[in-house]
Image (cartoon, rainbow, N blue to C red):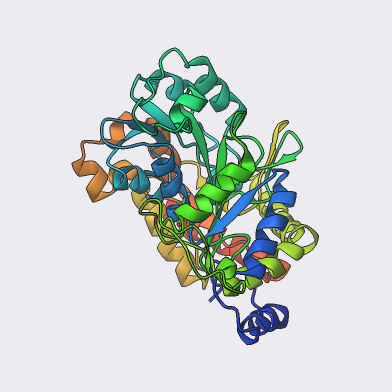
Length: 408
Ligand SMILES: Cc1ncc(COP(=O)(O)O)c(C=O)c1O
């Protein structure tokens, strides 16, 4: 069976983790700090903080911005549940909007959904193709008149809603580390960008995530980093590493923070992954996607994903193929038939309105026709470093065979 997305674990990864284990420092420490510096350099921003998942990192962002009951956050209907779940966690309301036929959030739909309660927009770089962040930033900037900041959020002059004066753009870049917009790395366009380093992602730390800060003045990256560092460690004034300095045991807690720091064991994996990302990971993924493109793009039974246009280049995280004429039932039957050919595929994602919880909240899929049209025909094919060209050809043959079996 060709698996869908195994991680690339080799002797280098094992050695790096072993060194971290034997170093005597296994929680947040020198490796995490080094990983953060290298991530920031890669993304072209001053500061990145590494945490234990996209979910916890981005939930912290919503809490830092003071989002809660009565507030709205705009998210695409077509995404993984984490994007909307964090909005529920803070007691705010996810406002779902439709997507374009490249799977990314529709800027016009975002514009229509903006209200005086909108505090944040979360575009999603689904499959690794960046959403139209420039257009979304402009929508947020043009809607300053609509924005109603909470006045009593913080009284020391650091109220982030007052400082920004508009809705925050938090990019869900869980899939798009290494993707590019106008020649620049993802991370340097939205106000804050959240990455995921979950086991199946392009760059993994087993579990993990990071935030890249790109907020305009008067926000300062060092200040934001210091705040999120404390916020992710119980609001404690010193982290474990700082407390190891001779005599520096005393600490304070200024507010009840959360606990979602990255460990040095995770960072050890991340450092290896990052070092070979541009030289090995991305080129191999790109070449696999190009081979799929060659197999499917001239066959009218298929719609191939956008991997690149004038502005954007994908991180080649997922190859989101669509079967042009398939119904949802036929697509499901095709997946079963592909499995019989010995190939694991997947569907990204079941749209939020089709999940019990969000359906019960009153979100109906018929209000998101483009989301359903993409989802119901979608099949994600395997893309990972160790997938050989022969296996890519095997996958393509299995998919074509399965489509013939089901669709005639
Ligand atoms: C689009 C999207 N957003 C967010 C997440 C959550 O990431 P994490 O598992 O690091 O919390 C995922 C994870 O698969 C995702 O696919």
